[in-house]
Image 1 (cartoon, rainbow over the protein chains, first blue to last red):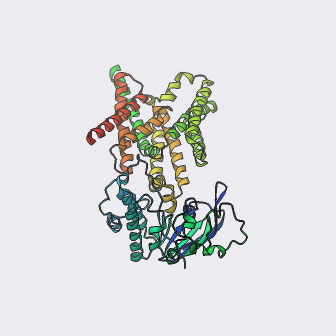
Image 2: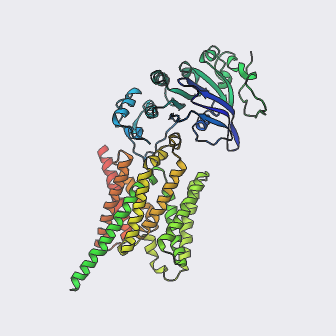
Image 3: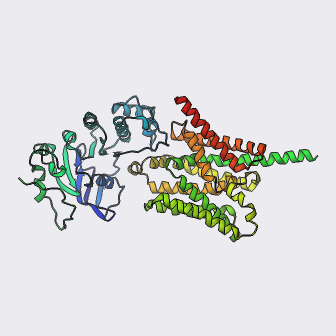
Length: 252
Length: 271
């Protein structure tokens, strides 16, 4: 039985349909990555799944008593708010010192407990966010562009860490990215989103063809494979919105 | 013996003043910290300025002043946070509301005979004239605010840090915002007699800002803010008696001096 998912999810923000008819499901222990260009509704989808945004129609389905660990895209801590890493890990639920220390050690930053959050590097900060998410003993981790602002080695190291955590705990992972390079290797399944789900596939399918340039407008060769979906996926009863298919469709 | 009578009386009103100030800073420390963290300074001003309008309404309708202030401050605070949730341009909106509330309140008060003369007491407080009843109101209101903050503390803090993070933890940020709104209205009603409508926001912000310089955790900052406020109350009252200066502004001036001292000390330590 899947942990979290959506059926026919539609979300409007400011009168604009940001998500239309999105259905997906995350199974226990799998790593699912949502890919899409900027403004394609990736973060909106995560926020709708988390219950932050109201749905226009459709539904979010969660396993009963589901424990979610959430790593937000950005966390701007106001400089007026003093916050040690240790204190942050106990928000909102207090955790004992040894659990906090173990979580920091697990994500590779055992020494930062007494540091101020504002004094951390970008990579340390993301790892602390991940440590906090892990402390709720989650069944699914939801990460919104967790490596934004990291350099490529930092990004690769972070995704390796995610894989390790999944291997150890069996936690499912649903994450968002706009960059394929590093994400691909770490994912079991990739969902391409541009206001609706354009396609889904294993990274092998995706990586065997450099077609994601169709979505991103980059890459060097002609593109297709990811877009073999486009006459498969169902659009029944759906009037295409002008923005729904802004991406180019490449056909071989 | 006239001498001893006057000494006893002096002790008494001074004791009441000190107790009133200490009761207030218990609440303004933690609440002021949230005002600083959430950048609600102008929000505090708007709510506090609305108190004058509350005074006018209470006197005109012969309701207790504390009640009138509480109702109007609450109405203002709810209006402001509703507008904020709708995404209005907050800086301008708050500026309009804060100054309009003060101006309309002053005009309304001027229609009431007998109030004009002690207007400065509503604007700058009259802590040396605090009665036993006032004291009960101040400590009761303050205790209520402190209880509210302690009860909601983890949720308030999480929602302040990040609304998304709060949502994901099952906390509703809008509810926590309402808690702060309510606490702010209560503190305005409590503080009016002590520092007056114009200086309530100062008593919220300055001690918290001073505490920020030395605190490493949110809890430490809230407690230190109360401690700074308590020292400011003591020093301000002492200065007021020594140099015959107005008590409310003297307390705020003492808090400002503490802020400056801590900021300079911090700069010195850092080299």
